[in-house]
Length: 329
Ligand SMILES: [Mg+2]
Image (cartoon, rainbow, N blue to C red; front, side, top):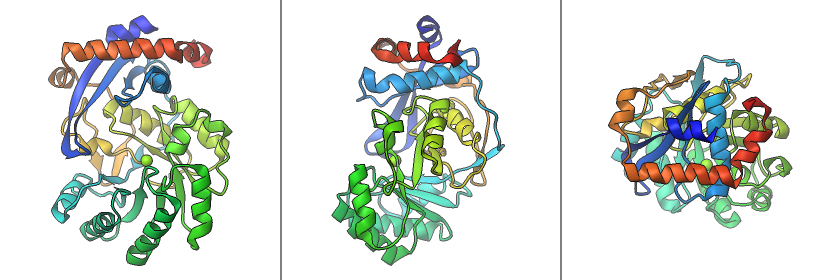
């Protein structure tokens, strides 16, 4: 298994359209197997242990056929990074034609957040708004910020991870005095055991990111275990990672919420075409094109880096996990 991963490994460095949080490129490793391609792209600060589910997920994607798709198209949200300025906001939203839901990154500065939301609302007045705080608010900050948001803009769809811990999320729900939905992201995907969490009274919607949760099958099991509605989402994945997310989203009977799988629109270049049509993306298994693999190919030292990363992650526990999975057989 490890040999075949390393043999087919390709490393690409994809440019982003906008410089947000000083990210201008996204580097990902891709490899192929009997069922297609897998993407291994844990964030650069992640060590081998933290990267295990990402590698298991990539192996599953490359080696195991996806579950049956119950939808041909998946509705997706626009993603607005923490940028400021009316023109910038309008420009970014123009990359998401037809999306009727906007996910807005907030949490660093309340005044700037409120202005960003108002710019998004004026660029697309009928859109639903969801916020992503990445756990950055204290309970009191969350109370203040959410009250201000509701006073200015009315109801929002949900708030993703307003505070860091489950206890804080529970306290926030009690303190705020009006009903609203909380989506759990970091609290689930960074947990040592997502199955052991008691989400009651804290989380109403489960964010599902395929790679950090260890693959399509495990992500489904986590959603089914908690019995809550879910939103399949991506980080800045290449088209290969997005296609894995789409196939997870398509495995659910219903699409209650738009999926957060349009982050490819933030890239200036990708390994395959994945058009966003009228707020939806077609479910498909993508193959990176040879042309794109060559165009965005990383330098030899980056290949060395990613090969070592794969090997260290394999040794840290991915090997044992894959050996336990019957789907690999
Ligand atoms: Mg999030």
